[in-house]
Each structure stands twice: as structure tokens, then as C-alpha cells.
Length: 159
Ligand code: DQA
Image (cartoon, rainbow, N blue to C red; front, side, top):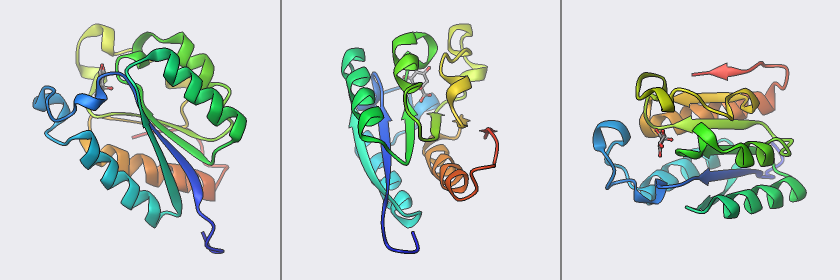
């Protein structure tokens, strides 16, 4: 930001995303979570964000992390909830308490895969939604979050 203060970005990875690099490359590419985080951190920094990253395979841990973020406050949140996106009302309820703009990202094209993946229970509370663009989708989501913060009147975006 102009005065040098960094904005807080929470980067949350849900269930099974720690296994990137070993999951089906046709859907998820070859990138590992560590590589993906490095990419996101660097791009986010250029947009004036400091990234706070978290991954868990435990739904309750993700809910508790979201509670902490809701209480402490954040400037932006980017989440790939993995399979939780399709059914976890607990994670949805916790996300609803976050005042900051939320980006929902999926590496694969969830809208064109199995029927059960086509629905996201967090879709309508996300300001930005990106799917099917691999790691590049995270970059696009960051750009959209930054644009949203810089011009708050901008509406919901699906990329
Ligand atoms: C995913 C898509 C989900 O359907 C799946 O369960 C994942 C990853 C993606 O990034 O494409 O774990 O969120």
C-alpha cells in the first residue's frame, strides 16, 4: 500500500490439498502445496499483502482457524476448501462471520466434473470465484481481491 503497511491475506487450504503433487495431475497439475504457497506469497506481496497460510485435513481445525480470523480481523481471505466446498455447512457458517472479501478457488473445473462437485455451499458468500485455472487461478483471485479492496463498489466476480 502507499504508506508501506501490508494488508493481511489469509490463504486457507482444506482437506487433501497438502497432497498436491501426488494427486491426479490431469485435474490438479504437478505443483506442490509448498510451490503454490511460494507463488501466492510473492504475488500477494506485490499487491501489498502479507500472506498467512494454513492447511488442515480436519474440519474442526479449519472452523477454529476461521473463528480466530473472524475475531482478529483480516483484509482478504482466499480459500480452496477442497471437498468441503461441496458439503460443509460448518465451514460455510464460519466463513459467514468473516467481514473481509473472500475468494473461493479450485484448481480444477468443478463445474465440469462429477455431479457432486458441481455445487459449492460457499459460492454465494464468495466475492470472487475461480476454478479450472490451476495455480494461475490463485493469482487471478489475488488480483480480483486487491481490485475489490481498492474499489469496494466492484461486484461479485466469477473468473
Ligand atoms: C478442488 C476440487 C474439489 O472438488 C476437490 O475435492 C479438491 C480440490 C480443486 O482445487 O479443484 O480436493 O477444490
